[in-house]
Image 1 (cartoon, helix red, strand yellow):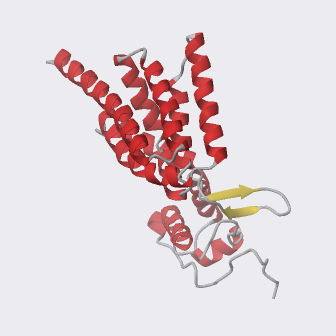
Image 2: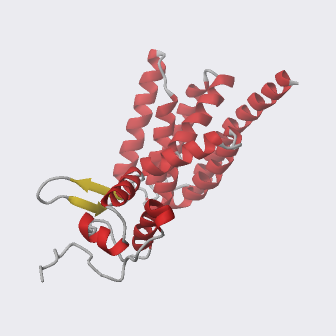
Amino acid sequence: MAATSSNQKADTGMFRPVNVGRASEDVVRQIKGAIHSGQLRPGDALPSERELTGRLGVSRVTVRDALRTLEATGLVQIRVGARGGAFVTAPAPGYVGEGLANMLLLSSTSPEDVTEARMIFELGAIPLVCERRTDEDLAELEAICARADAALKQGDFDVRLSAEFHIRLAASAHNTAIALIVDSFQGPLLMSLARARDVAPTMGKQGAREHHKLVEAIRKRDVDAAHALMERHLGRTAARLHRRGSAARGAAE
């Protein structure tokens, strides 16, 4: 019997024959189930196409379709060559963020809702940021502020700089779950900032000043000051979006 690669999960009980009527979907579901249960972990190699075909009772075309679906969602990486195959991988925040942005854009979720959600996530992270921030965190936040100042001076400020600041601030909590959630929110965050800027084209100047003050409060580990600054900062964005929404509704009546 041929030896199995040490990094390949070959447990014969992991997969079972699928329902032919929805074969590709069932293959995806079973592989996802093995990942979610911990039977397969990032870095593990999936069984070969031939093995999966035999265990699942489907064609190679079905297996390939399923693997392409998993690759598109960031759960699997397909490698070619002598050491190629399908390998489990942890989805990057961009995959999560793109899916979240699409759901928000295609649903009835408004930029106001996005900003309210930000207030929950970002205000809640402030105590951890103040407690855990490092000198490197402060230096990177200051660097973003400096780039924003330069952009404002040149008259080409982009709201992406504001989004970058908030994402890096959340990362300063040194909590993987918080960083992942806020980073995956990047698309909706940019959408809400862009719409708020429609109401206040010069909002970047005040926001940049508040970013500087936030960094200083975090440097001093002053939770109360940082929380108050963030609450005012996000609250103003929420108010602008509310005014924009009210104006749009009024124009439609």
